[in-house]
Image (tube, rainbow, N blue to C red; front, side, top):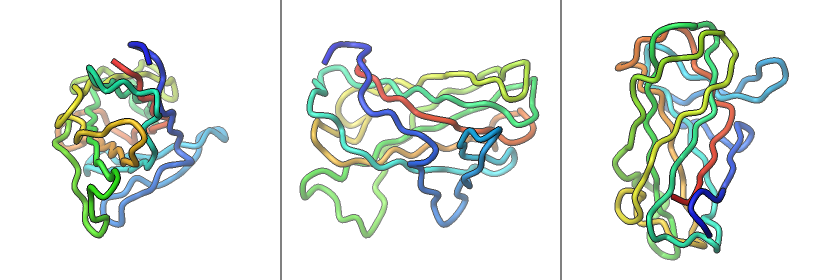
Length: 164
């Protein structure tokens, strides 16, 4: 794998909402989205396997493709974290997400519904919960609505993970 090469691509169809503070599934003009509230930190979780061609030398960058339901000004904040499930690494009866990495103070697009792409870098190792090639893992995406100031819902369309 080379730097910049795409690893998993995750769409709203693949997202799972946690029982508490979960972002619900919805659609915008038949585009599947996950909807994130503007006053409460809501999350969604994706489960996937890190491809066998992941080199695991420098890490990954997570790209969030999002739009805003109504906001055309102010900023949105996103938190992202990994949870390694691996081969006999995690008892799945409880959560074990690593610390979050964030992209903060992103000015939202000037047009509601216009998709913006932001990125969150992770270094290989503990920063991404030591996920390696061929391992099952989960990725948690949270809108940090308590800290951002954009009004109205944020809409997550897709997530791309690239080799750094």
